[in-house]
Length: 337
Image 1 (cartoon, rainbow, N blue to C red):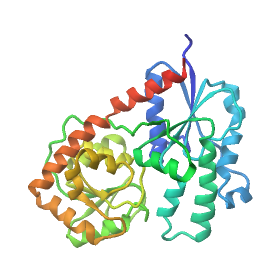
Image 2 (cartoon, rainbow, N blue to C red):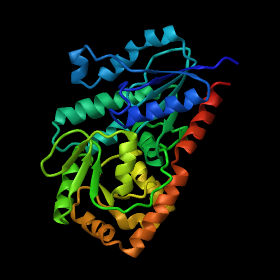
Image 3 (tube, rainbow, N blue to C red):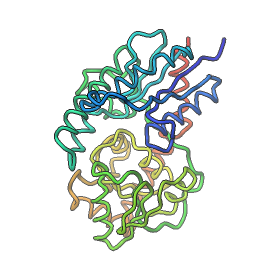
């Protein structure tokens, strides 16, 4: 049997640009190792200002890729997020939902205009994302994401495949300091993380773009540098309002770094398996609710350290790159029969 041509649709060809781009790069690696001919496609910049005003550029961008895709003749197309509506085509289509634009926009209204989050986010982004799931095998990256698909778009997720990360064999190191990983967005609770670190008189190291005199700015780190950062840090402060299945959370936990966060995205799945990890969870938009979890970690509270150890063990078993690879390989093989 000839190896299949598999196209992966990514927002950008830069695999460090964000979580979806990282996912696309990892999936391409998995499928290439299994013998497929894999190519990552990324849309050109949108041209229509009118469509951009209504958040519909994603539809234009995706439809504009059809000619290039048809020329390459893929047997399978794996699309992501809002980039997945191609109209009628011959290839088999898998669409991955990394959360939903509706829930994302509702959680990220602070500092955004009404027009921006409602028209461009919920209407334009939500419509593009909903149309992407038409006729596709729908994959959600967490159980909460699957529930959102049902709630906002009326879709059933055909399969839930959580993100996976590579494991560092040595997670036992001397740990100190607090970290924040990712873009300095209000949705991710960046300002709250800074204020929490200042309240407990701890420096906050930030791995991500941007600069802030209140923090130790590390810039964008590669995979090896991030592994080292997680392995030597006491805790990642991540009071996010919305995530689907954060790579940063998974990477921190698999490297033994405590994650002080909210009950969003993949975290309810962790709490279902390790309920005692509730000791490290705060409430969204409630800074006071994070003070006790942070103090528990910094003081080395025995019950909290035990909960962390259980969470690290469970995450390393259930969210490894090997498991991610196995589940995606099985799904692609089903579509290649």
